[in-house]
Image (cartoon, rainbow, N blue to C red; front, side, top):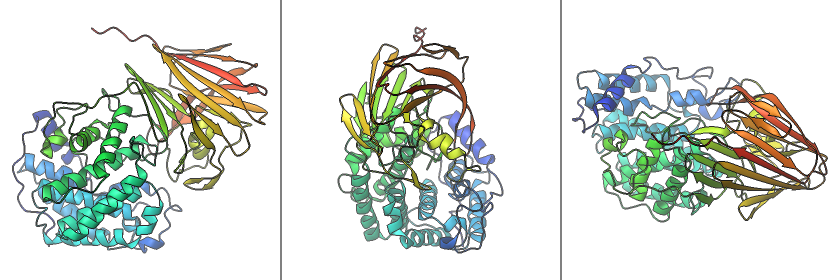
Length: 537
């Protein structure tokens, strides 16, 4: 029972270098993926222990079938390369290794949804999505059944699950020619988008990585909707998708595609037709900008958009110098970008990062976040080292976590927060108060913290890039930046070793500049001076 057509259509006009990269990447795909890792392959998926054996996230990535669109691209570019046969064999082997609703691949409805979206995209690239072969139809039906089995769980997450699951269900219904069901799932996507994405583009998960996954999901269903001639998704789908696109564009470095580490993210890149990988968000933003804002972004010659037949617009998205969205304030000055975590909390924070500030130059973080680590880390100390208050660049009172952990992904006793001019004011459950304001003149960034409450001691843990830091009585300096401090009470400074997560599942040493003081310190002014940019050649 075939999954794919036997012949691929001709390739679109793609840059020769981009074409060569596609064929090379397809040739480098593993021949025998590890579908199960340490997890039981035959256990009922809904009864599977997802944390005891290890971290399930890499196993889920292997089961998303992201190789299918790549092999479909390669088949069109290199008809004699055997890529279609490899894709057919991959799907057959996957189905044998993962019987319906057994093992880790079926344990999460979102994973079934992402698998369905990759399969739908591959079929569309092969011009087989309007009449999928029998094997593909069978797999799409199974994915649709898995998504439908736990709808309330996905909705209750108030995160990417709540949108990617109906997106996958929409793709399944569309390719199975169940148009009424597809329209119903489209209405659900629009309703969830209205709840989880604010008018200014901020997502419930304050995370560039998860906002990218959101936009990738929305872009694929919008492109499939247009391709199949369905009516537009109801309001506010178009407006909120465009706003989220602008939000991620502001955070994406135009030269490198890097985004700041904020909250948690797992390195997902859905439908990556440009071969950008998880560290370069520009292709995702370009695709979303063309679909939702009728503008371009930073990749006018993006090959992924060419594969989808998206024309190159004449206009491009702008990057405002100062902006505010739910959960975040942002600034951009030339090559520098700063983002400040704060605002009234409607959705659960993933880390103790409230009042955290990240400062970047050319996509490189100068004031840094600890990163994600892993959802099920190999050692218990990863959690506090990366997600705790001391892993972020805000004040920590009495060496205590402001939000005790109530579960693997849940923090309790959220602080009360409000806007305070160009800053954010916070009061925690112990009555400690902090107001942080940020200003910039030229390449000098000023962070003013005003404190109050019953605390006895306070500390800041400024997480710095690797450099030759020299400590002085009022700050520290290196070729990357100079930090200077002024307070209304004595303080001590020291450089200390720490850790950060440069990517999902990875950990590396980091440098901390720790400032400590005792009450009654009520005001600290931190000035971060970046080198003057080199003049243009």
